[in-house]
Length: 318
Image (cartoon, rainbow, N blue to C red; front, side, top):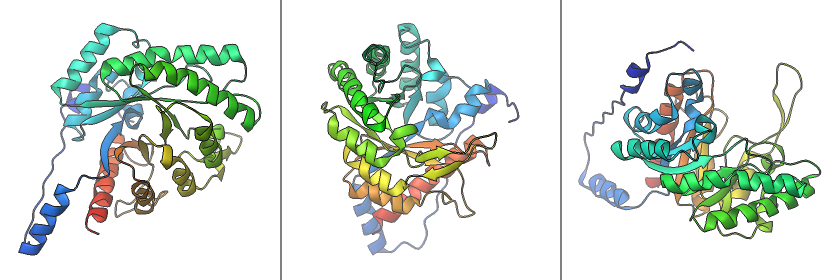
């Protein structure tokens, strides 16, 4: 990826234009009626969509709120803890980040937490250590005005053993998070979590009302090939998996990788997927998480946003 000037990148903005002609009195009335109805999801932006830009040094976590608003016209963001891993307890840093959000009229939704230990570890000491490692991110989420953190429930052993251990780890963490009004969400994020049956079973074992899921439309690979050319060779049905997780969802991750000439996502039928989301009674955030390599992150994010807006318009016109 070619290096671009950071200041130039941050100064970009989305140019939106719309023209309406030939609208009848009846279509005008219909439009007003549709606008009065609250949409079943609001678009947010997951920071992972910009991981190549961040890793290339072209922007930082501190820049993220301004980029979300000025470049993409999005006012809700989802952070990745690895982009400010040493700042969870740094109040001056968090206050500055919060100031950036206020300056750009941006709301913080969640922090995606990785590399803090296996919440599904069968060993009690390892699991408790992982639970305690997440406390600082619960506190950071509270300070930033987030609603949730996303965690991983990895572990060793049989799927049943990991699920039992993960339920215990989640319950322990949820107790701490509940006192701070923070949700603890589990995403299908590899391993057993990419199995919809396993995730559904996990949610039925946990007790905290602030425990839920973050269904990702694309993370359902059950087995990868070995070697340098690593590819998914066995995948759980994504539509079934999302259906199983939606009853517990407190957000959804709108994953995209590739698009066709009409702007539709190649790997996921978004009309079908978002119907599953809508039919579940969901009301919340759909976080754009572009992960493709065949176009720039900027193009991918904008394409995903346009796709979500088109899908929402399709549902509203029915």
